[in-house]
Length: 175
Image 1 (tube, rainbow, N blue to C red):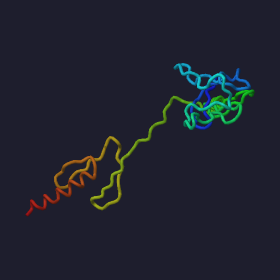
Image 2 (spheres, helix red, strand yellow):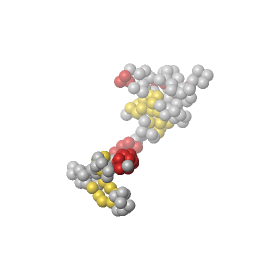
Image 3 (spheres, rainbow, N blue to C red):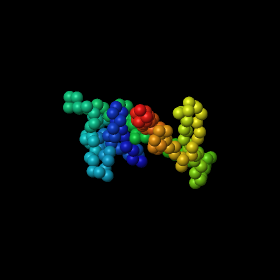
Image 4 (cartoon, helix red, strand yellow):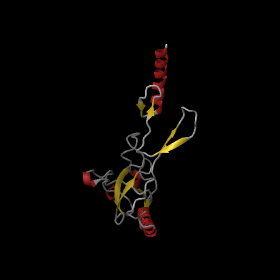
């Protein structure tokens, strides 16, 4: 099984390993390209040992980055767990898949969608000082009407701004 491995420090994908062929001593030729489909070369020279590996993505202090694999013979996989050389690998991903299949058996998915609850708008009659409101269905969006000129507005703040101006005009017209 080919597993992509991450740097223990910066969590970048630095290579891939074949869990069936990797062995001690771990050298650069056992760490494969992290992305061979796109022609990315292996990140570590074949003659280097695990203690000599340097992360290609880390900061370049004194011509070398940090160590990508802190633990000897342990590699952090892309699934977030560690693979140890010489031990069989049991992916958390496969355990999650098994658990999901049990959940799917217990709670089968149906194609029926739950009926959506009707949404209602709440409009309060604030002009008369009455704090009680009433519910409107979505098709009946509220229209706010100016009490002085009868102009309709979609939003209550727009209507109230207009009414202030309209009220002044109606007072001036009376004089």
